[in-house]
Image (cartoon, rainbow, N blue to C red):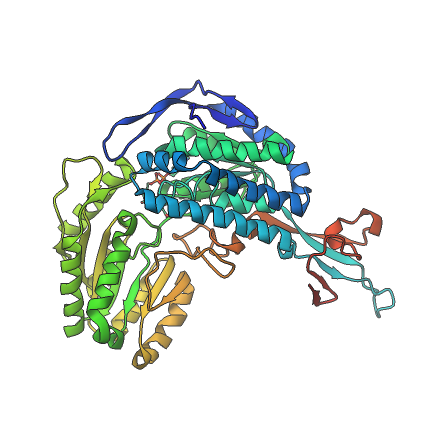
Length: 525
Ligand code: NAP
């Protein structure tokens, strides 16, 4: 499949005339062909209008057809073979093995949403049958189902060019819900986005769906994204990226004449609490796994463990020495973009110059393009409690060890934290009292609690929560990974005393869709 530099607006290739963009190889700094034409107002308008036109037929497409469509996208991604992996590698600097794994995850995610669509639980079909004889008042016939919100704007993430991008979790869950999507390609992987976009475009045509089910737009700077979010046809937004970008889009969405929800995943430092017994038992082993986790993918994971919190003492000293040795031995590696690299270098420079912080490992930046070496710091909890800025996200392979005077101080650090995607606890049985004290605090702060493990490696499953209170996300009631991601793009509608012949199939008495229905409070699967 050839990359042409075009946007995909419905079934039409459109070469944008607003400006031009080139993808960059972050390892070499070289530009990558072809030149992409950036779109403008009229392109966004056309994509969004098409999405609106597609909505009614797509949302009522059969569950079988929609599931087959999602599976055909997965098959199309696999059929691209090495060309997809090679291009994603050139554009992101990520190793091919990692990208091959990420493609598997993306295909698996599409398969999971295909299964979810067929399963039908997401519709939440609920029937309260009429009770005309009820006293003192008769009960009406009331039926509920969930319907999709409408066209969704999706911003591909830089750090997962496949799994959180054009056919990633936001796209798969919105399409599964029955929402047409307009995706804004991340400028860091334009060619990868086009390749994946063409797969979805073909799957739309093969399924016989309206062409507006999918469009891909490209543009320089924030304008095109803002046009998308302000377009009246767009009814929700999925975003993964910076806190400033997410906040800006939330403001834009809230200022529309008709405000819409923005599901933004933004910033998280994923604290790891090392409880005393667990630390004493295996300080060195935990240190090695910690460094593996913080350097994985050059630290460019939203679940990167950005701080470790532990009690001062011999075991922590052993942990610090082992972690310092590990981090020192890890080489520099290529970050995704020059912007992310510059932000990382600035972040570790700021930490290393902060008076209360001790730099355990910090290597000078090299001349080579986008190369980042891991960095490790230690600071006293009392200083973090005074200045929480010392424990904010530095996106990349950097982490801060927070040394607590006692258990009470560890609890204070947990209580002061901002919202997070995850918190991890290393604990063995003698730590249970402290774990019991921390757990209810952490529940209020995070979307996922990990025991005796690190947060990187997010399982895509039905029980996964990849979300959390602000600033981890803009809406702590949801998840962007796992089956629950579909809920973001649905809303409930009640049908009161609607004649049987006019009812949607999902809530008809005969249950023609064969989906789980709750009837008079009893779930019938
Ligand atoms: P980003 O700068 O937030 O950009 C993400 C996407 O949103 C890009 O397509 C960008 O467009 C667009 N965008 C950003 N701000 C916008 C605005 N105000 N209005 C409209 N569109 C906007 O994120 P990034 O490029 O991926 O990385 C930058 C930083 O984000 C990283 O250093 C890291 O701190 C953070 N990050 C966090 C996560 C996470 O998982 N939470 C993942 C990746 C990155 P343009 O680039 O075309 O302007």
